[in-house]
Length: 191
Image (cartoon, rainbow, N blue to C red; front, side):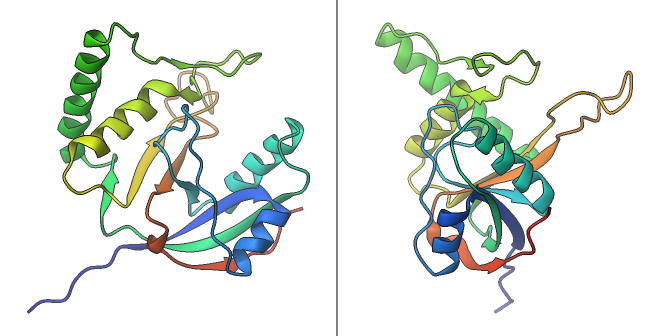
């Protein structure tokens, strides 16, 4: 019998220091379940990007959602992952979209829309209500849910005129099954 490949990666979670210290002490990390989360419900990590996780936590402080920006690292097991960077997942997403649309049409309800947060003017539509609903619908369609979702997001302003590269682009992971968090670790906090 061959060896099983275990795709382990490093992720960083931006949060309030109190919650980060609790996670480092072994407490369960609470998942996000906002209707606008990019990858559906889960515990969000920035893949390999501690600095971006800190930027996120600092943005939450500016919006008065947290008091003390903090980042911790985690080893994540992506064995059963809906990896949206892989082409074979695209048909699954299309099928989930069509299913969601059919359900909502029958219920005479509108499809959720991706949008900008109130007061922000940007092209990225950071509130991903439609994408979140499609991913949640996909989980409902499958006999066995994925344990995580991974996606690449071009975000922010172009890094130079005419560029398709954007200054805030990142890969993000939503862990649905907390057992896929192999361990957490303390990182030096960036000033």
